[in-house]
Image 1 (cartoon, each protein chain N blue to C red):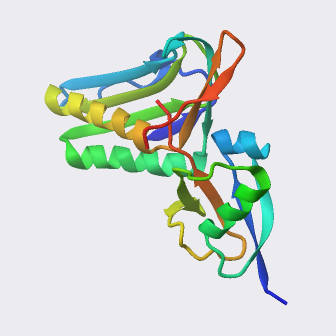
Image 2 (image 1 turned 90 degrees about the vertical axis):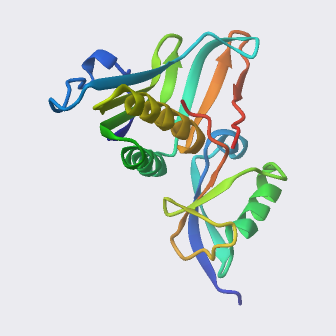
Length: 137
Length: 83
């Protein structure tokens, strides 16, 4: 399941129970807002999202991960709106029988989300200036 | 008289800042493509000249050469920076 939310992401509230007794590995990636980038002091971040296409593309990435790796389940949630330092921007969780597939699928999902899902990050600096980050795509 | 159709253009990130709009309806000539529309918007709003943008029509990725239809939703997608 791929979700977009304007609410604060609380990882402890996300369903983390193993879905079946065949699952032997759980991998989690959590992206957190940090207070600096490229030498500038960051005060907060703002994420804008093209939600209809983001959910479509994000769901496609999770489906690809299930086809590509031997995993039981994949979940990802991405925040939008204004975020403070230390808040969770993105959270990925994978369940698998073994650690290799679990780690690789988790890595695949976050890398593809960063490359393909239409979400944009604006950094608001301590100096009062702000700027949309330039993507690699 | 040329026939026209109406589409809605949605803006995100830098493009939203430059246009100062989330979306707008515009009347365009039939058989127009996203390429034609971007040229018009570039003249109106001073959008970047050589944009590295992708296109979505009705919430699916599409080509710069797609022929737009009446009531289409068109989005120019800047390089993404989520995560």
